[in-house]
Every structure is written in structure tokens, then in C-alpha cells.
Image 1 (cartoon, rainbow, N blue to C red):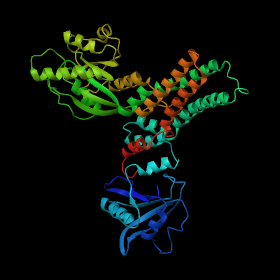
Image 2 (image 1 turned 135 degrees about the vertical axis):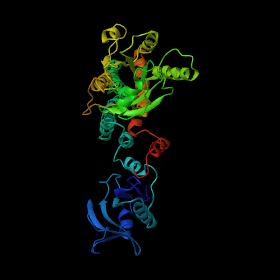
Image 3 (image 1 turned 90 degrees about the vertical axis):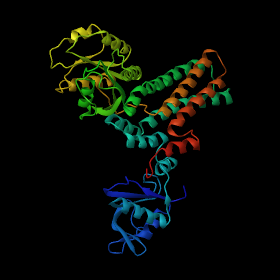
Image 4 (image 1 turned 180 degrees about the horizontal axis):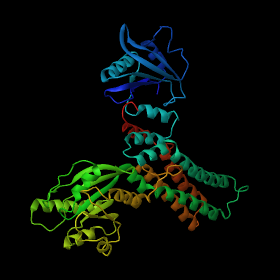
Length: 457
């Protein structure tokens, strides 16, 4: 923390502008050694904080680049420390030369995530907000981005602190009563505490109930397309992706292996998997593909069952329908541009899942399919005003640990155990929740979390 660190904070690729970030106690002094204003009468060491200064970067008598230099004194900076950011031209060589010059005059190269780590250690953000930073960078869809920004604003921190305050109040009351029984009575306290733990447990349950949606937002919905050979599965994938990714022919059994693509529909990521057509076959390679299709369907978050409307249903369809049991699925009646041998009413008699009629070839009905998928997973609506979604599995584990401890408290109350037993489990819950926001974590965990960041962030 006493070192002054530096790194390129933008992508190392040709761009309009590149940013070299310097953070630490010597930021101004180091920048002052290499910066010269246009008129030569301005010194970075003396300019006001939160100003942008035009000039040039020099390495001794060698001109490196024309730049803008932003000065931000701590604690009003990203890291909470004195920070200088040099905006240079965005060429890879230009950024590299400016960074080399900054390091030559006293800074050391920043480690991955070290700027954000310093922001956390300096109290600018808590650990949940720090983790949200990398989630914002890695967000693959609109909902994942909104959820990460919500966490970055401190929504998780707010509700976790609220629950911890309730818990620590009860711990303090018990400890005070045990230390001063003459003035603080705990008669009947067990029932009062149990009412309080029910409230706490309800809040924990509400957070844990969002884990599934959070996981889907962050990682995407594993979507497997199944159906008989030549039902139009690959055509559907190509239509959704918007380009010819899967080979389409009139020959049944063209698709032999799994083809994966990620698409975004209405702000939701779908990890699409086109599979081999499911049918009884003696072809060894095709049989392997059918087996893979069935296994992936069993693990899918969503199954898109494509039915060829131009041919009658048969035993293969019955086998596929069995895969849909207890799964989220949409039945897609494809090839509606042809003479129909299968109607929606025929399918409704066999499945309870939503049915959408489309023509993948003519790209008709695709909007209805997209809306149906959204409603199936998110009831057609997601808001991020005050709602908190748990997207981090570390947070999930901590919440489950806290709930387990609260349940132990309730068990102790039911068994009439001494009050100090309550304190032990309440403190465990308090510390488990503290690990989410970084108030009860070890150095090893902190280092592990920030090692996953990119350099310069």
C-alpha cells in the first residue's frame, strides 16, 4: 500500500485514447518528472485536484506523446489514494512507452486487480462492490449488466448490513443481560428472539430465492434444441443467431455432434445447443450424437422441442416428449408454411408446455418464441430499482451458512438451552454475512478474489 503503482487501464489494442493509471503517494511527483505543459509554466505537483491538464510526456529529452493528465487527490479517487491518469494516443506502442516511462521514474507495475483491491482496503467500496466491478466488465447481456451495476451501487451491502445490525443487537442484548442480570431481565426472551429470527430468516430466504435468476442472468440459460431429424432445428439456430452457423440440408441426420452458440434475446443470454435428431438408428456415429442430445437435454435449463408440422407424430416424438417431463420447455411447431399434418391442438393433448407456431425458413413467429422464453423464465419483467439478485456463488454459500446458524438458534430456543448458546450461533451468522461485504474475510480470500481481475482495474 506504500508503493505507487501504474498500469494501462484500457485495452492494449489500437484505439482513439489509451489511459495509464498511476495510484499511490508518489503519483504527482512521478507524473511531475515526465510531464511538461505546452507553455512550460505548469507543474503537476502544484495544479488543483480534479483538473485535466494538457501537455506532453518526456523521457529526459525524448518526447514520448501528446497527452491530457487528470489529477485526483485522495480520498476522492477510485482507489482512495492520490491518483493520476494520463490520456495518451491509443496506439499499443504509445501506451507501452508512456507506461515504461512512468515505471522508469518511480512507479511499479500494478498486479491484476490491484487498483480495485486498494479501493476495498481503503474503504472506498466493500467486497461485494469490488466483485461487482469485474462482473460489470464481464457482463454478457443487459440483465447481467444491470444486476452488476445494482450491486456496484451497494444494494447488496445495504441489505446485508441491515440484517447484521439486527443480529448484533440481539448478541449485545444477550451479553449485557448475562453480565448484568440484576438490571437486564431475560425472562421470556427466547420467544422474543424467535420472532426476530423469523424475520431474519425471511430476509435470507428472499435473497436465496433470487439465486436461480441471478445465475441465469450471469451465466445464461443453457438451451438445448431437440427434435426428430430434419425437423428444422439447425434452421432455427441459424435464424436465432442471425447467420449460417449450422449446416442445413434436406438429408435427415445431417447434424451429428453438438453445435453451441450464445445469443441474446430481450437482454437474456441463451447458450444454444443444436443437437442430433433423436430417432432409432443403426448408424454408430449418429447413435452417439443422439445419446449426446438426450444427455444434454436432461441437464438443460430450457428445452426447445422442434416439431415438423408437415409430417405426423410418431414413436420418436413420444420419446422426446418424455424428456420434457418436469423441465422448462417450449414446443415449437415448425414448417407452418407447408401443409400441416400436425396442429397445435394435437400437441396440447400430449404436453402441458407452451406451444409456438413458427416457420424457421420464412422467419415467421420468431418474435413470439422470444417473448415466450422471456416470460417462461422471468415472468416477462425484471426490475433493478431496489431488487437484489444473488449472482455470486460465494455470496450464496455465505447466506446458506448464515441461515443454518439462525436455524440452530431456533433449535436452541425450542430445547430451552441457555442464552449463551444463542450468542454463539448468532455470531456465526453475523460473521458469515460479514464475509460477503469483506468484514470477516482472510487475506488469502481477498488475494484470490482480486487475482481474477484484469491488470489495470
